[in-house]
Image: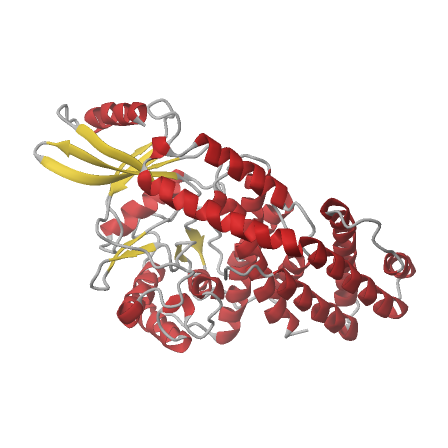
Length: 336
Length: 143
């Protein structure tokens, strides 16, 4: 750890043109299987800042592009959304052995646990209003206005849904270690029952959910995190993912442990100016569970083959995959 | 279940043996907590793993026996009949997995056939079994 601290200090002195900068209290923090995450203090020019280092791991849960994540932080921090300020992006592996980026630490906050029956307690409604409003503002933003029009993703409103299905089908094809008949059936259903064209092409966060934002003690959302899967797509993708029952321990009526489902959708529609037409939203909900299953299949493979032995990958391969298989079987089985 | 229990126990033991000191207390605490959950789930899987696979294989064979006569494709019908007549030769997880994977591949094939041919009754029967299989494989976090 001290070697990493020394190298980080040298890098930041040069990068921030701060020869007096010192790095202190560097410590790895749990979570974020897609990147190694560290918190540290940077003292320079009379300032004492809490910062976060996100470094590529040897292998990750889903291969993601750290440039994408960093640019999303830049864009939406610039738009005034609760997003940590990005400080530096380094693609050259020489300074810290692997590419990394550094951002502001949002201090004295917590995340809501997806395992907790009531993760936000008395603040659930206040947090829910902000949660769906911030998501709506991401959906409402024009990718060109926030400088992300070249992001990965399909820009044809008629083709975007199938583009996403193909993306996750490829992950299943590549990483499946045992036959997954429910997942395969879900992929076929999604292809045979395409949703209406997207109302617009937006930046999709890609992992917008309980567990991926920070709240303070007064119930204010201070930071939306984990933008590594962000891309261009149908804004209903984020809504479908956010209300997936996995994020509320199976409680479909109170997605994410915040607002009742209908109220959540109303808040999102009002703030985004978009409609969550039931047939389209249903398709994106099935898609969300399929995408989840693909991620967990990939995580299980990384773990089983020894490339990333973070126990969260084993947990994902067991608990999360079984959960999403059940959701898909119940939802698609009911239509058979 | 992937990864299998043996892999989880082996990698967990390795992580514990190596320690977490160099990463700091917060990371160590979070990692130990997750390792604890996985050990607890592994204990449950040790108890139920063979039972799940045995019953799943049995349910799939019964399903194949029930739907085979209604399958028009003779090659697929023959495969279903052969699978339905099969039986377990061992209760080792690895052996149960071997037959389980073959049966699940055949289940997928049968469902595709039903979807392509508009065989709604067969589809419904397959989905009813798949719902049961998914429910049986759910992982409970309760102590």
